Image 1: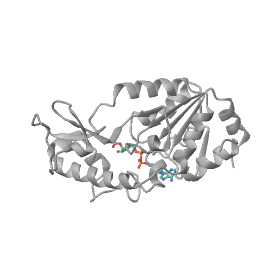
Image 2: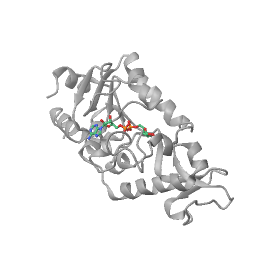
Image 3: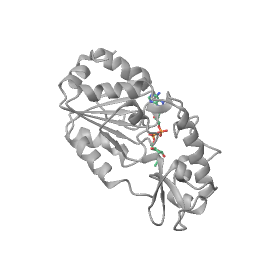
Image 4: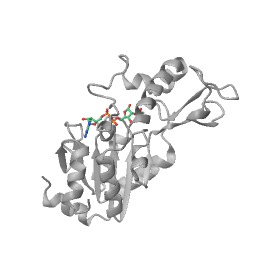
Length: 242
Ligand code: OAD
């Protein structure tokens, strides 16, 4: 299933980066953003995960995040998440960059995680930036901070800047790794989407795992078609580190 070339690149890599998207959590039961189950009440993710939309219609955006949190609260990491933990233990240096806000990599046991799009379990006031745990949010359609400002999920919405540290560390890791894996992402949302290309331009061997072709499939060194919850455990097995 895996070429010697790929296995040798993994075995010899001093530094590995994995970039994950919604696809890695699909087998846990978290819907992806695009594709069949991507729409929620006929809204595209760009219309809901949107800073302007939140200010215009916070009730609708909160409803979507409550819906997503309810799903995430009920699910568990899958074999794909756990295989990446094994790969982290195996590799001299390993960085896991995720666009997911679902906390599943952390729950699985991954350690060096860069959360590019925040974390759905955190919240903050849009005015004073006070942080709120989920159980501290006032029970209201449009929860408000003690300062009067609106509370919003502490995730990156379209129109927001990405957390600077996570972004800079991700770019650095992509430029300095020997092997880059793009897993379960449509590679459509910037700046995360340019990380595999950045890695390739800086000399890394780039692998994609996705059950469909993406905009980067023709640019990577190896594109492995299939589900990450099946491919990644097979890969770990082939490396003898299951
Ligand atoms: P998408 O929904 O755009 O893409 C998910 C990708 O995962 C698709 O290419 C699927 O083919 C693939 N996929 C689905 N199930 C899979 C499986 N079991 N194994 C392997 N691949 C699988 O999700 P992202 O690329 O993560 O941003 O989307 C990027 C960003 O767009 C999200 O972080 C979010 C969204 O709007 C914000 O909210 C800011």
